[in-house]
Length: 555
Image (cartoon, rainbow, N blue to C red; front, side, top):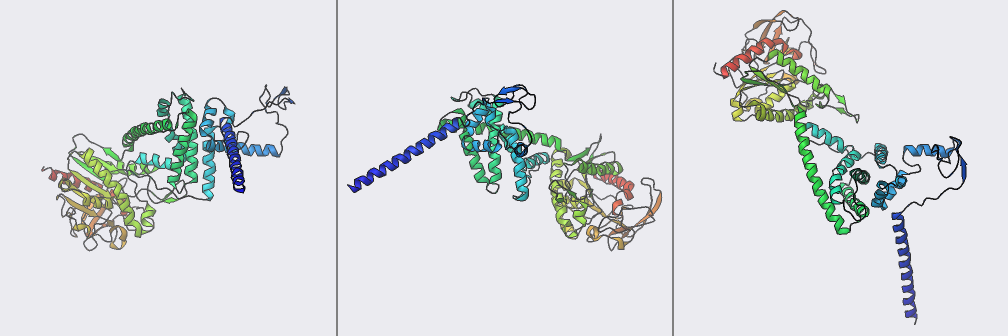
C-alpha cells in the first residue's frame, strides 16, 4: 500500500510540474505575441506646456506627456536615458525582446506598433557607440587588414571589418530582395514590402553585431548564434514550418551569395579603374618605355588609432601628390621625346622608417618593393606591348630597380635597354645575378648604371652606397678616374663642375658646387649630394637614354 501511495504522490507531483510548466509556457507564448498591455489614463491633467485640460497620457494639442513638470532627478535620469537608449522605449528592453521574440518584434514594428520597440537603426548605432566605449577600456585583439592586391577594395574591406555594425547592416541588405521574393506569400506576414524588408535586416544586423562583439574572440560561436537567431526571426515573422523556413533561408543564402559575387566582381572592376597604380605619360611615336620608381617622399604619420606608421598610404591624396610631384618632375627632366614614361604609386617606406633605424632599412624596402614588382608585372602585361624598356630608380627606388632586375624573365631582360640605379648601391651579391651587369661605357645595353655623388669620399652615406662594387661617371660614362667638366644649369644655377669617379669607393666626386643641398635626416652629411642626384646630371641622363635606345634599336 505504501508503495502504491508513493507512486500516486509522485504522479501527482509530476502532473503539477507539467501543469506549472504548461502554464508558464502558455504565459510566455502570450507574452511573445503581445508583450505590452496599454491602459487608459482617465485622470484629468492640465498641460504644463500649452495649458490645455485633457484626459490621457499625452496632451492632444501639443503632444507633451502629462507627467512632464518641474525638473527633478527623474528628469535628469530620462535625459541621460535618451542619449543611451534607456528611456521609455528602452533599447535594453528591445534587445531583451530580440533575444526572446525576434520575429514577433519585427512583425509588431513593421506593421505599425512603433511604441513596442526602440527605433532599430538608432539602436544599432548607439549599440556600436556603447561597445566602442567598452572595448576602449577592455581591448579586443586587433584584426589584420585585408590584403588582396586591390587597393581600394582592401581599403573598403578593412574599414568594414573595423566597423562591424555597418558591415552587419550592409551584409543584411543583400538579403532584402531574395527575402522579398521567397517569403512574399508567407502564411503569417505576406506581401511584405522592400522597406519592411530593410527594417527586418536592421534587426538581424543588431543581433549579429551584438554576438560578434560579445564573442569577439570566438567567431564560430558568434556566427552560429547569428544563423540560429536569423532562422528564429524568419520562422516567427513569416509563419512557415521548420522545414519550410529552413529551405527558403538556404535558397535565400544562395541567391544572396550570387548577388554578393556580382557586387565583388563589380567592386574589383571599379577598383581597377580607380586604382591608377601607374603615372602614365605616353608620347606619339614612342618606341621605348621608361619605368621609373620614386625615391622616398613620405615621412612617418599617425593613423586614426594613434599609431605611428612607417609606410606611405596611397589612398591618401597628400601621399599620392608627393609621389606625383617627383614623377612629373623626372618625366619632364630626363624622359626623351621618343619614350613613354611609367611610374608606380606604391606604399613606400617612410624617411624615418628607413633612416632612423638603418638595421630595418632593407626589410622595409623589401616590403615596399613587393608592391612595385606586382605593378611592374601588370605594366608588362597590359602596357608594354613588347617594346624595349629602361628601368630607372632613385634612392629607395634604386633598391626596387635592383630587385626588379632579379625578377625579370629572360625574354624581358633581352628587351631591357639599361637599368639606372641612382643614389643607391649594387653589392657583390647582386652582381651574382645573370641580369645585373655593370655598364662600361655610354653605349652598352642590357647593363646596370649605378652612381652616387659626394663632395669628398668621406661624405659617403654607408646605408646608401657603402657596399656598392660598381660605379660609373654619369657625365663622361667612364669607369676610370677620368674627370669630366660640364656646366650645371639646373633651375637658376650656372656653375662649372667637375665630376670624377673615385675608383676605390665607386662614387662620383663633384668639385665646384657651392649651392645648397638638403641634408638627409639622421644619416645625412653636408657634402653628400644624395638629394641632387638627378638634377646634377639631368642633361647627361637624358642624352644617355637617347643614345642607348638608338643602339638598342640598331640606329
